[in-house]
Amino acid sequence: MSVKIRLRRMGANKKPFFRIVATDIRSANAGNFLEELGWYEPGKKTDNYKLDLAKAEAWLAKGAQPSETVAILIKKSRKSATTP
Image (tube, rainbow, N blue to C red; front, side, top):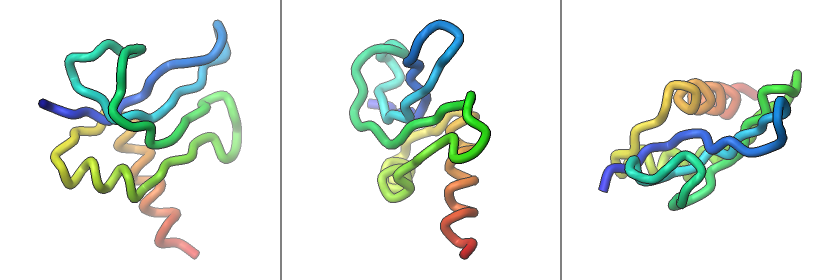
């Protein structure tokens, strides 16, 4: 089973927000997922995402592949975790 960390779209028309989930690559975008790792809301100016970095790192260690957007969010989380 191949696992991908990607965004799951939710919200109303023209007001999207996303949940960051670990899912099987064969499942639909709005289908089943294995674990929820956080959320991302692109409409907000500040604090527009929350990611449980420990869970994300655990999935990456198991071989999960992040999508492009999720990879950027993981990189931001790592940077903010090391910066005081």
